[in-house]
Image (tube, rainbow, N blue to C red; front, side, top):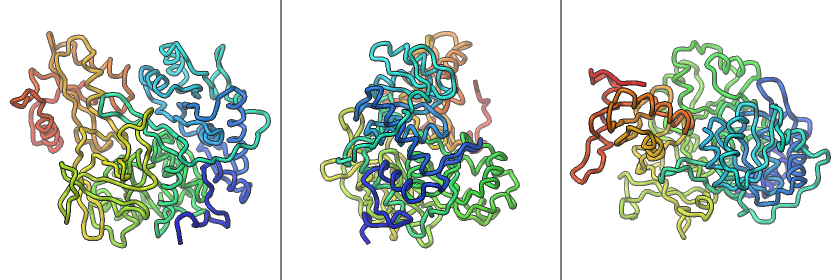
Length: 531
């Protein structure tokens, strides 16, 4: 059967937009629970559709036109879901951002996106207000969830219109739907442009996996942050696609999450690799009885961690490989009848994958190469002009290096780009280095990733002081904490006399990364200089 004709856990055919999927779910199963918060609030599909429609009407009442960018800095809560779906229904552009961003990061993203509206909750409103002051000109309207609104701001209840109104149908699937910021190799975050076509295509590609990742009667744990593409489309989008039930949790807690799984009878558990490290010393006997499937993504997971978890629980762990720019899922071990250890599975139906060498020529056989992908789920380039998107033939270079076995299973072995992945979030060292160089007393700096059992990798900064070294470490730590989101802040700052350089003066980061690997294996006895 053609992908476009697959059923949506019912008789209806896929709609041309996420908003259309939501309206279909509300019509077909209005009283079925859709979204549940750990704190107890809940929405049926009819209520979720009504909430989205009221947000869309409220944006229209504010004069926010189709195509305008609406940013939201919210945790995993009902208002995130209704805001997201409401923005899409209004045919505006959703810009979900990390609620733990710094004031400086908020201000930069507001300006870059040209946001007309920013929605914040009680945990983010102070930073958002400070960012809006920094923006000054063309400042967006601020909408506040829970916290009291200041003069000129709107309470979320005031944004939600009293009467929902019918939305115009989406006529162009290439219309921009979402901007998702990912750390940029230039040193500043760049927003990947995801269209309605890309988001829906990936939902259909994932839905075509057999055995299926999700059923209509599944209870799915929404533990992953919704502002991240994994939580936004692979989890929330798939729940909508299948009309499953999503249980929202704002953060992972080793014991609390287990209790929530039991209380809500969670059957599908999408997680990031750090969860397995946190549960390594926890007695899991009988604690995961409702779970039928664990899905791990956003960063590589060691084969021994998979085997250890399976031996302790009897629950299979299936991995995938994805990227923000691919909306996000590219491969899954569910695509292989017997996925080999260390692989992230085979490409989903409708996604083509090839390997190329440094010159761009296709690599034959099982030799490694840079991964290129081709599919309807690909983004349209980076905001605002579509730069660095797929080429004229539709291929996009991921920056990841891997190889394929005879069954097309993908093995990731390296990265072309100088990238650190912390708990599934991308950190480009150049961005952190740019911030550290702003500190008085820093002559030079190199930032690398170091192995970390809980976050996969940690950010480590090697700093060369220009003068006295006694205060530079504290100064760098304080400035990074103010200017960067927490996951980008160095966990360790090494003050050194000089950085290792090549004969041409380029920093030998390979040597620094090798030093960190040896440290992680306790092969170095030298004292660590930590902040």
